[in-house]
Image 1 (spheres, rainbow, N blue to C red):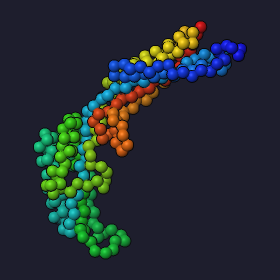
Image 2 (image 1 turned 180 degrees about the vertical axis):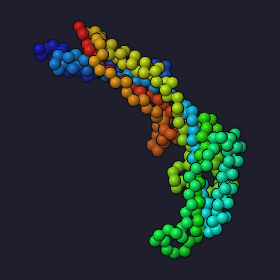
Image 3 (image 1 turned 135 degrees about the vertical axis):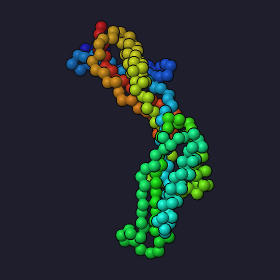
Image 4 (image 1 turned 90 degrees about the vertical axis):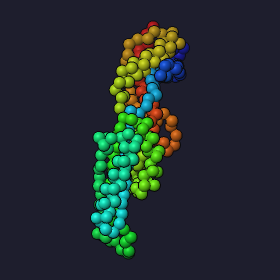
Length: 242
């Protein structure tokens, strides 16, 4: 049996192809154990997409020793931010004030030494919009708020927009069909190279959809980019027959 192809375990890269909007990859091998002849392949489908929903958490803070004055400052800052967003065409329906926090530094346990500002009030204003390019434009001009006296804070997390792609469900059927087709093409190519015919499916795994940053670089997260890439890999085992 030493010369029989059924006793040989082979690994091969059987294809890397480019299709409109997607690619495919395939790997194949014989499973000679217990007499099975199986080729395992992977089909890859990718799409470049654009975010269609943006959230911009704007965190700002006011400090002072008179609570009433600090409260007045935080309210004035909130109105200044609303006016700023209104200049870029955002209406109040997409703007929500959240997470008001008041800190009395003098009341903190184990506090010692002089206190410059007894009261700290922080506020979160959340902008939600499907006009992602307008959100990005406004975010690039956030320095206008600083010039107006608004103190932006990142103590509770980043104050940069978060860009999401919420239309994934619309792409899934087409991309799964493409990934499956690419996998079958790879399996068919392997079968022809091994003088076999492609049989039925032994096992199939459609894979998990991933949304990635289109421009991947250290320190750049997917959620901070408007341009994204959707990716799915289907893994399928086919029987080989004579």
